[in-house]
Image 1 (cartoon, rainbow, N blue to C red):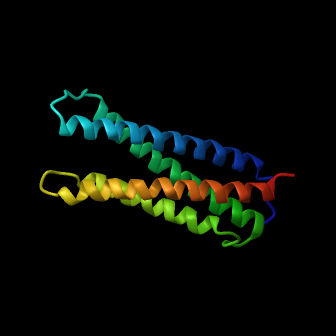
Image 2 (cartoon, rainbow, N blue to C red):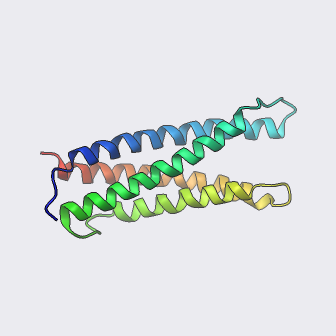
Amino acid sequence: MNLPSFLWLWRIAAWSMGLTLTGYSLLAVTGSVLSYTRSKTVERSAWLRPLHIALGITMVMLVLVLLAIGLIGTLGEYGSLGHSIHLLFGLLVVALVLTSAWSASRIALERPWARSLHLTVNGLLGLGLMAVGLSGWQVVQKYLP
């Protein structure tokens, strides 16, 4: 493809990844508080669950933006995909985020498996984000002059 410099695209990706990591951290904190208040006789703030859900939706959107940027940027720069392990890690993170969102939507008293699946997937997602971050740093080094 004969496209202009992708530096602006990588800036959007960097911001999106930073916001995704921030969102993941905030989700861990709000999720921990939700879990604590569920198991104890501590009163829960009315805004906490909606905030957790909004952060989750935002994270899903950010990860999908990162997927689009990665695909467009790689295809634009190289004309094909699969130049590093970063694609595999990225697709894994997308799958984990979507699985986490789906399992969160299934959480209910009659489906106790959904909560444990949600927590397990989120633990794996933390590892996936580390892997995609490290491999992404290696990819970005190829584009910097």
